[in-house]
Image 1 (spheres, rainbow, N blue to C red):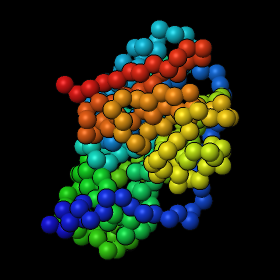
Image 2 (image 1 turned 45 degrees about the horizontal axis):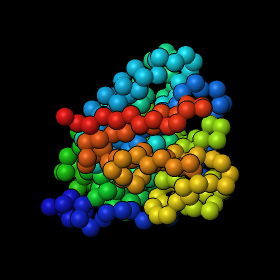
Image 3 (image 1 turned 60 degrees about the vertical axis):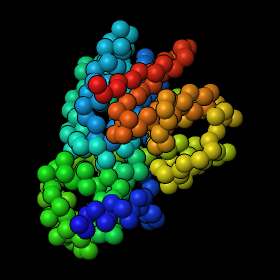
Length: 264
């Protein structure tokens, strides 16, 4: 099958972007608690359970609370469309829900306009995402090789509010000295001058201690348990393959605390 060959040929799209850079936003440092959730990859079942546990934990503390999704909400797992629906739903009173851009969201956005990226994305988790919108292999095959047919296919089945959500995701969020960035970036470079590609795709040596006193909270690289260092925290425990979705609880004058859900 064509789709099976695509999945074996294209492990990671190599996309060189020429569009305007994504925004890097700063939020007021007034939250009583913050929680960051690692890569969900379409595991809505785990996300719902973990968020319920987070809310139960945070409701014991007064003040406004923030939940940040660290990117890669989509692809690989079975419920990408439903995960975006969840992100667009209203959080409980006293809570704010935010998400940043991951390399998988960026790849889907690029696939809207480039059939070659679309074909690579299929082997990168895109088949599962399209399946969550009810698109089968016949429809996918009919679009291959044509940017116009790819755009028509995606825009026909993916709700415009989902596309707008993906296209408007910020590259990073900063709250005080805490920076949320999907892949964390390269070592030895100030967070504000990190290149977009490294904030989305970088994998390698990192700054565990930072001279600027920032704490970079990221996902992107799967670890057995969240890594907590003075200068960075990695929260990606590979939910789509391991069945474990992790979050980190951040509070002023308190050490970070891990919250997890594991599929039964």
